[in-house]
Length: 222
Image (cartoon, rainbow, N blue to C red; front, side, top):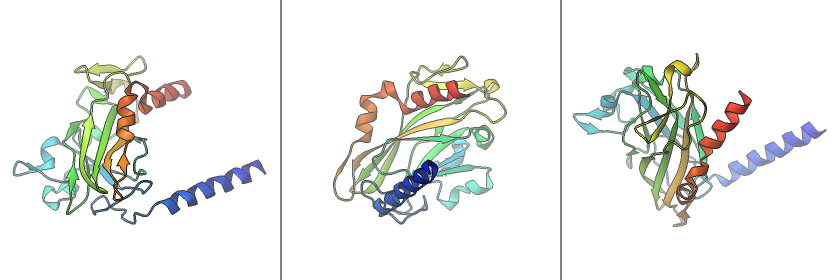
């Protein structure tokens, strides 16, 4: 009986969540104009740093001129709710093979993309990131990587690179590689000109990052 009630509650929550979502754009390579509580689809592409540019100009991973599909690039797609703080996790087993760098992106006509940021080299995998999606009247303008610092480093094998990135030696990652944690937040305004405040909240309480809490729980359970 309790299990049935729990399943019913979960179904009601899912239906309620879908009802709040007015955005019917599900591809990270299409444009969307969104409001608070909408789902927003964006992608993270993994490849070599130089593969994100064409004739020395950085392009969106959606641009066919990059030819990422023929260069062993990897792709992760997410659909978080607008202005909700989220923690995204990615299995890191193939990221070094893909090239060791990542770019976050969304849109076509209004294509926005982050600068390439290193994920892994031949010795370490950086495990903690913060990504801010900046909107103007509901349209994505920019994606920024913010340094998470080394406060999120946990466990005996964690190390701090360049005094700003938490990483783990690849030799300590195990067979499935090191998982990446991306703390996601939003800034700017939605299509109704409502302010998006989650980045302000994250920056205000950086020392209590979601990744740090997740890592502590993971270490205790596993």
